[in-house]
Image (cartoon, rainbow, N blue to C red; front, side):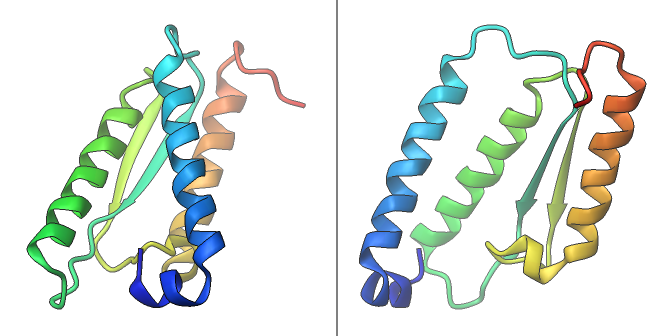
Length: 115
């Protein structure tokens, strides 16, 4: 979390951390992940100003994202070397194309309900 965010938006930062823990627990509690299209986009951008701890944290997040992408047999793991945490702002076309991939895979998979 950027230090400025912690200073100016402490409740938002706290909410994101709590939400991350909750989401992580829910995903890990799934015993049989459904065979649905799953796309995981991970930022691998390395900031030269990052501390060693921040670099290790980034590597851990990428590894967790990669592991998550293996939850479904219909999945893709995408990295963005030029993206920050805000992938949707840094590379909106990557996000758009990934959503199109999910929709295409879902339309080809008869087990995925399309509503």
